[in-house]
Length: 128
Length: 160
Image 1 (tube, each protein chain N blue to C red):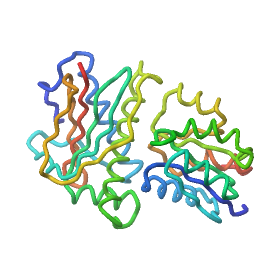
Image 2: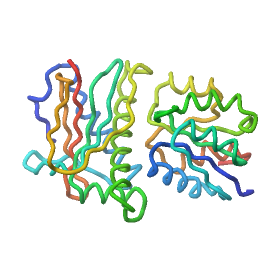
Image 3: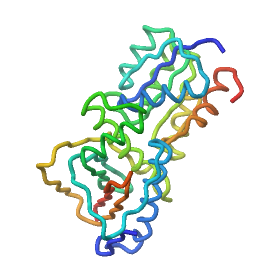
Image 4: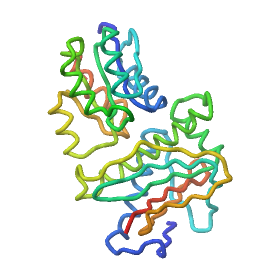
């Protein structure tokens, strides 16, 4: 698998590290990891980096994850990049909102590395 | 099981304590890699040197707190990341995320809150010289769990 650049969006630096570790445990080779602590920072990051995959929390200050997904859909450089939500908001309503807005996957916290593997690898064209 | 029946004032919420305990157990097992167990009544409650809190609003209004001593908070962070904490900020961040995931996991297990109960971002207080007062006067549930032999108190306080 080619090495990829992942954008990890979460207001918790601890959670960003855990998500990165989970990606590596899933066998995904990371060329670069870009971090953002809210949706607004992520919008800037996605325009200044060549990103292959975005993993995004929902509940964040400044701009939440759902709003980020909506706005990213209008940003040329973000089009086509798979976005996977990783969040404590596990209701069907939130899942539908995220997928309608353009997210390609949804992982509920707490999560295992296997769940990350199962949801992310198919988006990168690989079998989990 | 540390079930203080005096804390439970509304009948339909009596069944929530096992759900809260299960939510705590799952978060620790999956994210911290450690099993926690319910403390016996005779066991001590924690020194409250760290208090993480997450607000709930909507169909269920109130606050969920996770309290423990500094050493325990540091050990939780270490277990989550696999190394020693860089700073007290990182320890607070880890405990805040634990609180956030317990709140989310708990509400996801309840029926009837689908999409109608929102969580705030976590807040963490450190230091022992403070008193905690919530304006959410209503039902309270508390699960005291043992993590590596040290108590961690998880309290859900709901508006009536």
